[in-house]
Image (cartoon, rainbow, N blue to C red):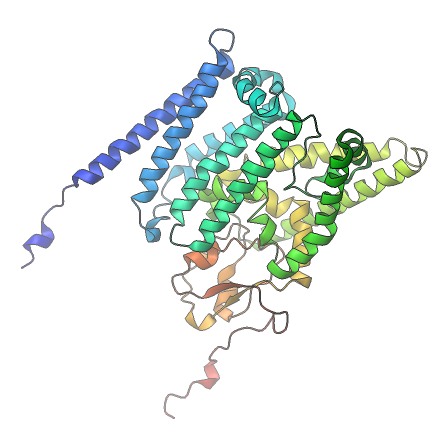
Length: 451
């Protein structure tokens, strides 16, 4: 009766072919990385275009092949299996190596770009085709950044393929990064217009409302430059409050923003590493709002200085801008914000430093219709929701009590609802009336076992 159940199972031919394809993907990834490394250090001996651009193409093909095979092998319910047993996703040795490489790349990019000349030369044909001008460190960065979102976007699409919400959300961030943050700015340069990123707004793109930037856009962009300034101002002060009122900060942080796009795709394997402690929350409050205040003050000081023709503040306002650019724009958002993905989770910058997240968070908490409702009677306290909350919110605490989650830090990614096995959580854009009302729970004193 039980013989068939105890017989050892042999791998099917299809699973064997899948493993072969995965190995082929790993081989291509290795060859691609080797080509990129050769382009970085041996540009004087071998063509960086052949090794660097060719290596990038091979790496992309290998990564897509590996992702396709490894993700398709797992059912939607198995996508997070073993995540704490893998070194790369549990702060093991390989995670530290990845973090070191990412951090080192950002340091070289910001402060030692000459060391990246081989890779910059590798993207020269692409830059000439798209922008009609030589490649530079920022085009190299934009190319790698966009590829990371597109390739890992495929990873996210396969991982969350049973959720229409996550499929559309992932396609959205891929579209905005490729179209609005990569192709469109390049096309503007090709047409001899100012480079402009239509998916970034003040205060995240803090210099877009600086007087010098406004003057440059209007002077060099003519009518288009006026539209760019108008577009940025309208989205910062009118569209952002309106959209956040109806949809919360998720319309931007999880659907449009390039920083959020990288976090939701390339950073998704590390979302469970976010610190859930109360100490981390205190640090969050202590850093993100002062940074928003710093951006506001810097913008005001620059405009005051511009109106007074430099007589009132002199070089002080410029010092504010350069200070912010170094410590926040470079060190925090780049070196720490992305380089520390494998160690601190995928939303370090969004959670502790992004001024746009702070601005949107205040609107979301106090003026929005958005919340995550909870059905506490169904919660089994498994903790999946808290584990995979990339913003470090203890979602389970709210769910156990049937309280709605109305937090300034929540980016509305919806992963907490996705991993809940009981359907306890629901993202809602309901009316503000009764927004803080929780679901009814049966209290201890309400139990009547004997009638």
